[in-house]
Amino acid sequence: MRLLMKISLEEAKNYLRVEHSEDDHLIQVMISASEELCSSILRKNLEEVTEEKEVDFLQTIVLFGTAYLYEHREEGGQESLVELLKALLSAHRRDVF
Image 1 (cartoon, rainbow, N blue to C red):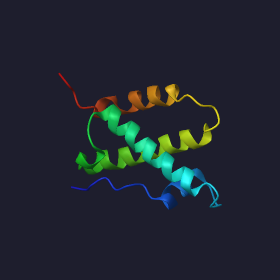
Image 2: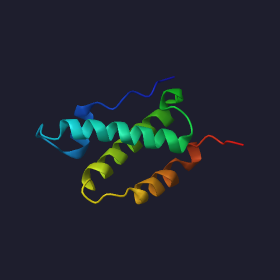
Image 3: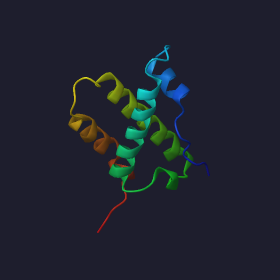
Image 4: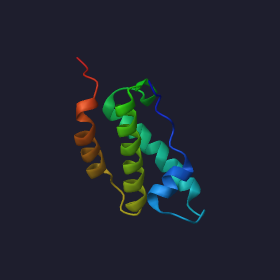
């Protein structure tokens, strides 16, 4: 059993291939936004995820969401990101009746 670890700024910068520190705060905010989006779509806290395979998958998805937000930061609306995340996370989504 492994807990989902919060994505660090350094991990995200490495994934984004960002070497400067000018956008550090912005990237940190985008990590949090991506985590919140994923949590909302999954209908559960990311801390509830403990299966190693699922933890690895979700960490990659959070990084992907962070990268999308960073690369499209000047465009505004994130509807396409939300739709893409829904498609990627649908198999892991908690059913609500």
